[in-house]
Image 1 (cartoon, rainbow, N blue to C red):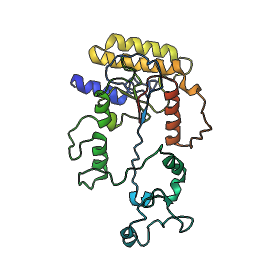
Image 2: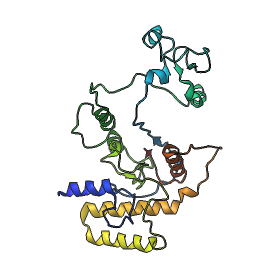
Image 3: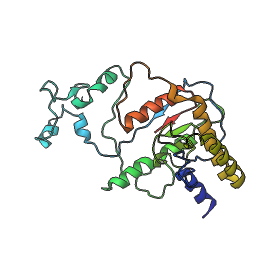
Image 4: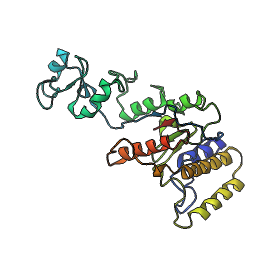
Length: 277
């Protein structure tokens, strides 16, 4: 196995190659310097990838277009004012599906926008290939090794102008998503589970594993392991789980609501987060 392949394996599988499942759903990131930004006032990009499917014409309804109703006599969303399940007017031509009513105020105060008829120029009918192309940003090419958000991060300087935080890019996912593959990113399933979980033995085990990685792994692999532990320490010291929900926000139960709540806590804890997925 080449050095690159070993590094990729570590990055994709975390430190869980240590037997017993004690370590963890922390995924090792590529090497990079680590300092905490002075302020969390910068903007943070939060990307949500819906991996199922959606009928775009019934989500953002072109109710002003007669052809829409001609082509969909049985499944079209009724025009605004046509009953309880009618579209919610946006601009006199497009409307939202009624189940998206909570988004309407954000459109009207110009804090949200909808971009219609956007997609890949590749003609594949494979859902999985299309999904991969969306994340790699190279439609039609399966040989791209990194994701487009990873390239965007690599081409930009840290928001604080100095060295990047070990938590500059975070994916709230069980594994490193394609879109961030090749970046200085960390993937975790939860803030509370980020690190070693072994009851009262967690701290001694953490120190032992850090010492083992420091002494047994050389070069880039040593750096990636060390920086992953630095990320664990940073989350632990910032204690984002202790930050209360503000402005009466009510996050829905389930994986998406939980991920968004924890991303919000990471942003408020000022750990240098710039991109969340």
